[in-house]
Length: 446
Image (cartoon, rainbow, N blue to C red; front, side, top):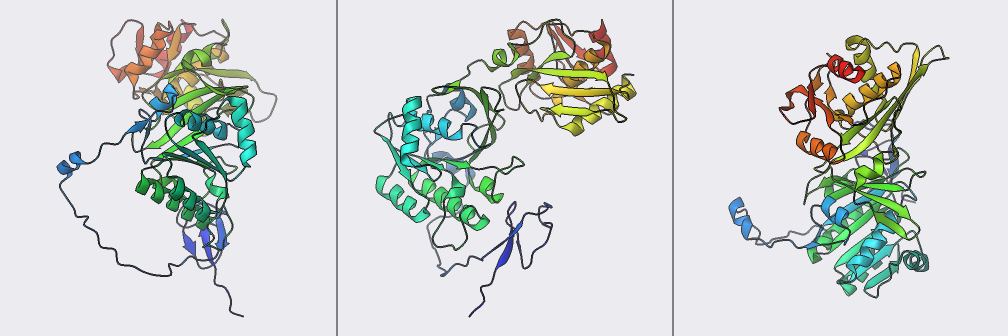
């Protein structure tokens, strides 16, 4: 019997190896190499088209893409004005976070004026109907199909010719031309490539749901994120009703935009004013709390940064962070000790971004530092104070982007003492530039 040749593929980047290895040389990840059967093209064809290079100025004459409204204003704004015809969006998120619910609502809204095909590989058609009935997302133009075979799905798309397509999820669909199981690297690559090709060819706006790994990254090869036009991540804590949609990549708009939703009995409800939503329960007159104008896109959102500093009962003091990188917290604590004379060697330090938001931008450094100082001295921060800025290792407060937008959002909610980096060159009433962390600590204590 002829032995079937296999290759070893990295689930993160798709690199191939002749034998198993513990670490992928290409992306550096550990324990991501899996065994699969190779995929070879049976035939080679020479394709000749009339496509020729042309001056970039002549591209202006090309067809202007139309945008489809989801009828959810904040979602349209996050996507750059709506969903572009032929756009392929990859939506990821934790299990049970509400991805299918959101897309069923979007599909139902679009189905009022266009034909929509909703393909589910995780549920039966009846299960989707039950959810649609509960959230009021039933429409005759919304076609439902429970299928996991790629060829059957492609035939349905060719026959129905929908204007909008939802695939839930890419990891459950398989191609019968490949012998590997659904969800494998080769299957995910083949399915996503085929769906993207047919979406571009027929100008069908498409949203693909992608499952995530236990680390929170999108399951499957990295090429999945490269071939789509937009990558969005749906996140939130199970103990909170809110959900945040973050745009990670967008070829038709700005990346970093967000849309905030609240989970209700009848589905997801748009939060039109996220700032008031996140700071509505801020405690008054309590130390360790300060407002931070957060933004990764063009729309700032006010969030509350909390810190708790207490005497340690352990030989090694605890350092815990919820909502920021623990390594970033270690740097902030080192700067506070060296440049601010805030000695925390015998103190436990806990930092939390209220509401479960996770903030990666360095502009949160100043707010975190001042929240820690406030708790350390047991001195409440002025209720009308906000702060943002990146901390350097020499204790300097460095400038960050979207300074004017952050100030405008803070003033909108009555915050008239806004600590900003010294080099921001913004001269407005209530704006206080600070050059070093020591200056900010002095202002806080006064």
